[in-house]
Image (tube, rainbow, N blue to C red; front, side, top):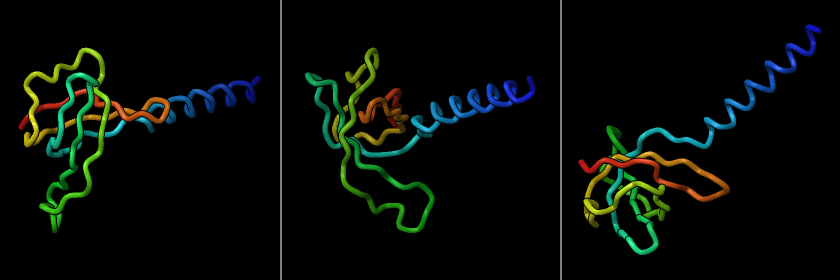
Length: 98
C-alpha cells in the first residue's frame, strides 16, 4: 500500500514539473514585426540588468494566443511578454507594452 502511495505521489510530481517546464517567466524584448493576418509577432530579446544589456540577439517569431489583441502593438515597441510551448510551437500568452 505504501509503495502505491509513493508511486502516485511521484507521478503527480512529475506531471506538475513537466507542465511548468513549458512555461517561461516574463521576458523583455523589442517587437520587430507584427503580422495581424497570421496572428504572429517577431521579437528580439533584450537582456535586463547585465553587462552588455543593450546587445541583442536575433528576432524570434511567435504565434499569439487566441484572444490576445495585437491592435496596440507596433514594430519598435519594447514589451514584456510570457511564452508557453505546445507541441514545439512557442505561443505568446500575454504581453505588456512598456
